[in-house]
Length: 211
Length: 211
DNA sequence: TACATAGCATAGCTGTGCTATGTTTTGGTG
DNA sequence: CACCAAAACATAGCACAGCTATGCTATGTA
Image 1 (cartoon, rainbow over the protein chains, first blue to last red):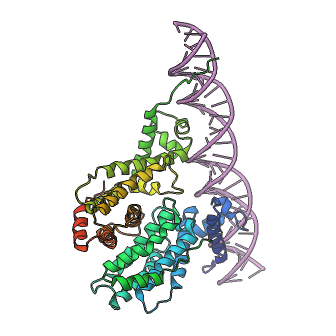
Image 2: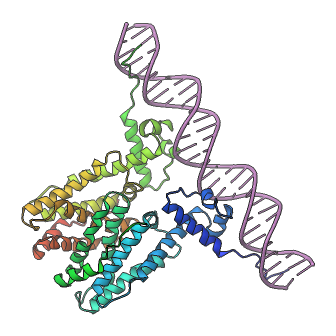
Image 3: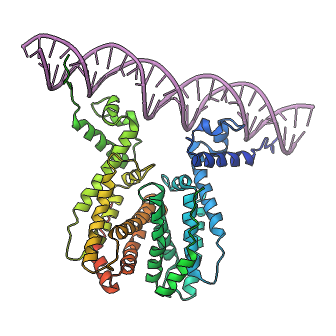
């Protein structure tokens, strides 16, 4: 017997290639099927089963990829001396990500929200929680403010607007309502109205161009 | 020749039966396929093509049904002397509808938001617009308030919260944040904070039980 | 060098939406 | 009332979906 034999190992590059091709096909509106996905690559249909266990697993991995990209984008927001500005900037980045990859954004919230690593979604929210917490410590929000709740509320506002834009019912300019809604939320949480307006205006960089 | 002959007519009951069966299958999490849909009925697969032109048309009709049900629910909110309470009540009804039919709600905003009658979606929003307009005329909001914008913002807040709950990321109790968000929005639109809180509290009947 | 193992390629399975075709039903018309 | 065009209908079969079964091949350790 040869007890410790592990034989041939799988190549991580194949997995990456399939995910990126799927993301690209999503962007170019090509129908993503088992066969169309592997066509154009050097791998066969079985690769999808080896690396993802099937098409469902591939979609799950694609949702994961969406949260990874979102996390990367949020990480680029460097905290400043103004936590309210920062929270606004994070929400802006959230909207920008959704508009840059509208189909991927839709897939992310598909079906049962089934992810490979559920922590990934929490991690992205954590960026907002941190900014909310810093705002509370800086005295911008009331002392009894729950950072997680404020972050969740900001997220809900952003998601509501951008998902209605991404799925069709509302035209893109509707996103301009976002600063007003954020100002309303932050002010209701205790921030000074005038100061809040300034912070939100600074954090709101409408760099929401499509690709 | 017989120029004006129209021959056999289709039975509206068949259409209704298929739609209601589809809605029921959605609720019971049964997979809706062409064959599974007509199974259990007295009609054959061709009926789906004569009445809907195909499965896509059936889904479109199902989205329409979703908006019809929503409209029915919103119509049950009778205007009172307090337009801010009314707008809150409308949003509450919106949430209740989404929670009672979470899968149908998700289907409503699927894909390209393709409806048989796009007016139906506008009609449901119109309930909110009317309440906003009455609030403006009653002097609760600033005189330069745009009722359509306020209605849209209320909708976005509600949709953001309830869609995140319906698709999984947020637990159901998160909906309790809704009154706070609405109060923030209405106050930012000009309503008196204390009066607003009262109105929202009166309009917010947490009859959000599932079925 | 030998070989157990896991990746891999191919072919074929079931189930999907859809279409083609022949049959039946219907309702306006002479 | 009989006629018959037209539309609804039932059935069978098509292309394509995801998936599985089955050998073949490559590989890393003993």
